[in-house]
Image 1: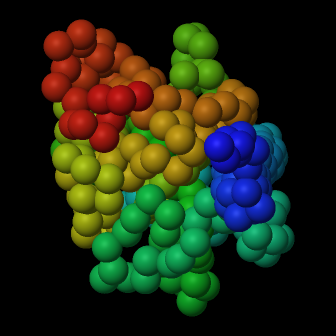
Image 2: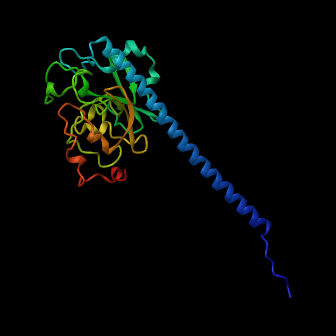
Image 3: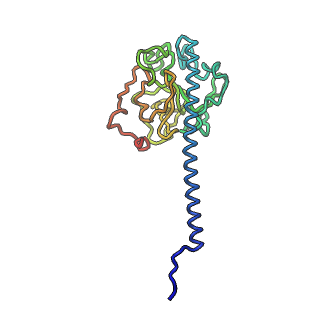
Amino acid sequence: MMKRQTGFTLIEVLVVITVIAVLIGLYSALVQNRAKKKAQNIVCQMRLKQWGLMFKLYTDDNEGKFNTGHDPVNTDSWMDALRPYYQDEWEMFMCPRTKTVAYPGDDSGTYKAWSLTVEGVEYISGYGINNWTNNMSTNIGDRPQSWFWGSRYRTIRPTNDVPLLGDSTWYASWPREEDRPMAKPDDFASGSNGTTDEMNHFCIDRHNGVTNFVFRDFSVRGVGLKELWTLKWHREFNITGIWTQPDAQWPAWLAKY
């Protein structure tokens, strides 16, 4: 009668070792990827903190007033207005999560930086300003002058819920409470082609359900994508609008957050 073999064969042992090695490799790659994304998020917030300092220096030198932005009398983009302070340190313009550039005429995307030439200077960045902070001297289109913040002092309310600059697919936007979220990520032809539902310039999933901002008090934090509709973008923005209600019908990609 033959003795029953109870051990593993050499081939079986080698197969098990190989499987374990593959699993360890996959786990290590996953951990490294998570660590990389976390580091990129920290760098992004550090750069926005630097932008906050630039805006503080600018407003200190201009009686507390922000740049004029799209003012028809005196147009002055944030990139141009702050140039004496950042002194062409172009790396500050980039969120580390941006990988490619959307040039004029291209559709933008979550991981794309925008490109715009102003007075002969080509700017490429992954950040955009809340245009409602501009120091506007008059109405512009259907945007009343009274809605603009204009100055870092023009309010008695807390200013840590007023976005100033953050992760964006375009350099400047006017979000409104009724802006609809895009049906799926990158479904919005943003940039110079996107003049409606402008909240979507900021509602991008670069940091795992969070987008980074420096606020009007120059503090920096990550904001949940749905939370964007609860911030005080302009002076008359309804922070309890339709997209803040329990029955809001969020698209599937946003519903999970």
